Length: 365
Image (tube, rainbow, N blue to C red; front, top):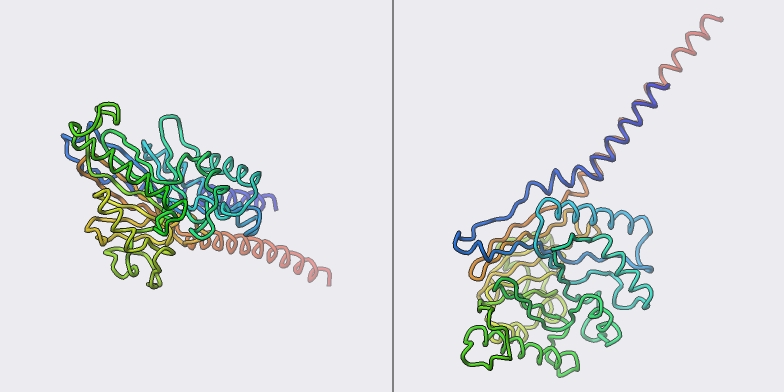
């Protein structure tokens, strides 16, 4: 019996170690940066990790075990990725929280503390989070109460320009791009115009006053970072995708409107775009004629096999790799096999006990 107990403990501990720790290194280590940046641009190379739609559960939705399970999976995946790839910057493309658009103030800041514990990054690595509809609400229910607290925490709820090594990222609040003259839309439009002017000064320094911009920064076409993808009819137009159902997308709900997409294109002349929101990955040449990546959800609650992107940027080039996390089906299958082995060992032991007792009983007759 002691031998059986010892064997069962070893099997259980080994399976837990493999499924809850080692498998993340095994799967994620198969990915790597697609480093095709030219040697002359390496001094200004930036390495980045891009994830989306973590949807941390709040106090109202979901079972406690579901919450615990999903958060451990994302935490383990994220920390494994940070250890393996050591990106300089991490972009999170909205819907950090599942209930951020209606939880109370105290619950929101508990949310934020939990987020920073799960997605901890070492000193020197920067996190940039853009708002999603589950963080501040869709356009029709956005309120300063929700946007202000997100901005206080992540310093981003409108249109912002982030310049690193002459690579320019423009982060967009997709829900403020409806162009209906609402307070948020007008504010975002003003911020967009300011970003456009700043980029213009980087491009033609002689056309701007010295004190209006940082003269040591050089111009390069910017990269769009937002929660919604730019306008497309459905994922049928994707060159690569993992959607199972190719549903029609609605403007301002699943994607930006045609008008907002063209506005961003004409104002910024971007060279690349990233979005989330659909929970599925997609690569396409969008309506602006540039390459766009939609990042799949990072949560197993939304996807059997979540994924993220590794990116390398320089002022003129970029290289993207899509990286997959372990499949939930694989982990469940392993646990089922372990359970079956567990059951077989017990049945084998019970059979031995039964045969021994039966033989003893026959001898007494």
